[in-house]
Image (cartoon, rainbow, N blue to C red; front, top):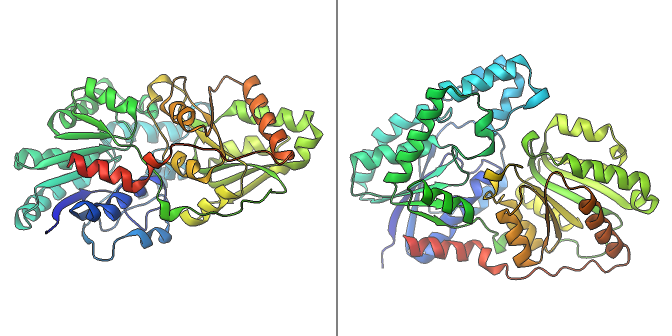
Length: 427
């Protein structure tokens, strides 16, 4: 039986690194097992914040990839202010860390590029893909955002080809994401963002969310929403180092930005190092990825200075190995209530590692639900320090006595292949 074609419109594709690329890379890897032939549409000359050549191994050898050129204003933004490099990953300075150049750049980014700086790819992509879909007899498309401008490509194609089946995949929310309120939007710009988001929700045949809460919120906003979380790929798992490590290592894997900075954790660790000589002797704080320089500066000016191991960005496979040489894994979310539905993609690889997970974010978060269901760790708010110290010390004492066990449960539901099966059922 001939597989049915599906066009996946995505900005992030290998050699892009980071979590944004992996969702549709893995779906594309497993969709052929369920009767679908993916075709990828992606920029020819993208400006990626991170590169990871090792992810190329997951690209199916026979997959069709269609590329067209994109113009992005990031080079201009970086000339204005070097810290604007963060914009490419949806990050920027906040609060007291903002210079006047940062404030100006954020205002320009929020009000001139709606919904984002990849918007200049929308019109040429609609023109190109209208012809391409007709010529290749493709009637199902996916748009994956952020960048949410890609959903405008889907909206434009739906207007021109009403019979096309369109799935809008939101890896993160649009106007409900935490940094939205920091964009310094004018009233008219805010209104335009919300009108475009509403049009996507109401015209897409299916809106995919990566969390349970986001799916419910999208439904309330008029979308035909379904949740398919991110997950882990069994082929990526690495047994790594299962022996008793010489150090009690707490690791953060990924990008740590100012809006998700667990200051109460750094204070708690600082106190533990000062108060507990045995803890200070064995503790190590490991960063794998890109940590904001201002956060790193703060930690380095505390008692934790001599306990830091900063490995920088590593290829995905190496990052998975570093999870295994840890005793606890840190995950952080935005602190406000509207972010309860964000489930960082790395939690699923954390789960399959079997290590204890220390999570920070708003109360009643979807992450907390997953940790409780899988017995994989504990979730805390950003104003809780006493319970955090107690939890870390409990795990340290278990580790010291060789009793820190790996007892995660019910994680098979989050395997990439099972998640692709869910997607195929929807298709």
